[in-house]
Image (cartoon, rainbow, N blue to C red; front, side, top):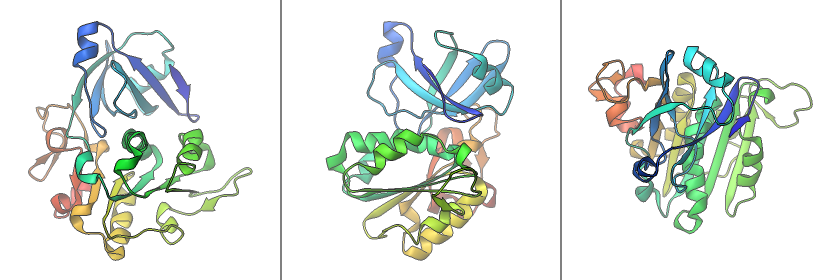
Length: 262
């Protein structure tokens, strides 16, 4: 399955071949894989689907380089390689019976989508779900239909904004932090899950801390730091941490001393 999300981003549904590999490929929300295209190289990509369907996963990929550019030329039934899954994933068990606040910017919604669908598939295990999503323009918004579905779920709130309005857009305009005043968020018994551009992290973290979130209640997924997946290339270091091995999901408390993280 290949689905066009925006002018430069597609969602790819991958079916793993071979009964043994289907059974053995198990992943958690927040983990990633290495996409392998023979003759072109590899690229680390977050898994955008929720676990549950044996031998199937989805990737949401922006066309930004050689590997992703070639991937965008492929169509249904083409064959590619993957390694993984890698990384720690989100601590789903620790989130149970808590309010969840998702804050995504741009393509950062892709890894959050894996957890969002996991939460809605087990709705009784979690309290209120708030999703704040920002994109550069209306044309850059991902998962438009799913944003509407999530907004209609029980005890959920979804707010979307764009940096620059265009066309017939009648929604919010401004960076994603401008949505905090419009949402009903309580820091008590809540966990915030954040993914997006580096500059977004800094301002979102500042807002959440001022709202009363503890440093341990801020979960950050640093997908842009992912490299070889196994910690051998040495390019994913943030201080003593290896994003490929120790992350990509971290608590803010673990990273706040390292300016290179954001």
